[in-house]
Length: 434
Image 1 (spheres, rainbow, N blue to C red):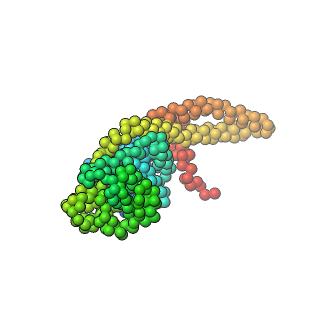
Image 2 (cartoon, rainbow, N blue to C red):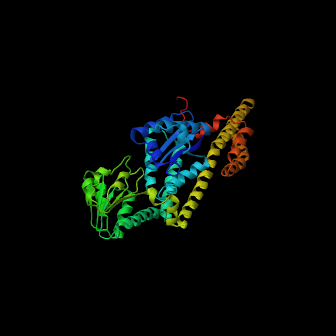
Image 3 (cartoon, rainbow, N blue to C red):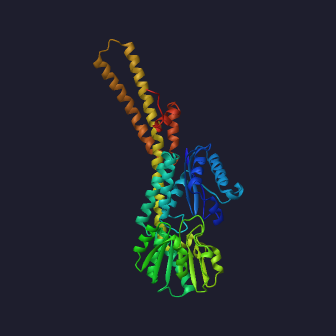
């Protein structure tokens, strides 16, 4: 069984395709179970956000797993498999681990270093746990991914990329509106990007900030943290707020449009809309209104340009962390993989010892208990000493690439039952009824 990732993101697919592939609610649950129940998949977890849909799976066959998952993604999205396949990426074994860690660190995000992905991965893991589709292998992978992501954010400045992207957007806004000092700003959404927007708008000197969000309490908390006059409103009051705003920044996680052209009054005054969401929050038709300009993520910069804005040092530092953590994870996994074979070998040796001691008792019934115990202890000590060096060494060798071949060699040399290591590795397997 090995780990496989099949997915598409803003880097590999157009926005329209991502919108069709995205899964939420009942559709996400259904897709998760269909993947888990497919022929070659033992464990499954799906990360579905506004700019990526990725299936993490433990599979018994690479090609079979890729085929199963690709067909299910095509069926879910309603796209022809041939069309979808051109935009899918596939990572397997070591590359799958590296990809998971990179995603958690924000290196694969449109906004390099953004921290929202950690929460999204955590939610995907919780859902898979609740639905019973995740097992030991994916549990370990995702838990380690979350830990590595937290480490990258705490030890580097990679999360400054988000602030840089907002700053670029506001520079574009200044080109249309002129000086932002004293302007009225409306922020739609209350997530981490909205928080960055509020802080950056305050530094730019806007006169007032209005925060609108579906959950009023979150909008209220964000407004209270602003360093300029700010207030929160219900999302139902959005139309009235749009009529008063000079600058609108929208970054929600909604699946459809949040701001339509019909909601924006055609006053003729200069206004600027900055859409930082994917899928888009703002109806592209607002561009047709007199005096209104609109910029989206595609108009600002690519992830690579954002990385340059953060500075090569921060991004390179995260890449070094990912490389070191991947190596440590794989070494530990290889060492753990050989452990069941070692246990199975020692179990077989113990069975041989007990069988021989039983035979000795039958042949020499006159031995007293003290002599029999001394002989038994001596035989067990000899076997333990003979097995000690090779079993310790095989664990050390297993940590290196290709180390699993040593476990195979042990099974061949000592004629171990192929099912014995598997039974040791899966303590959850039900034993015989007592």
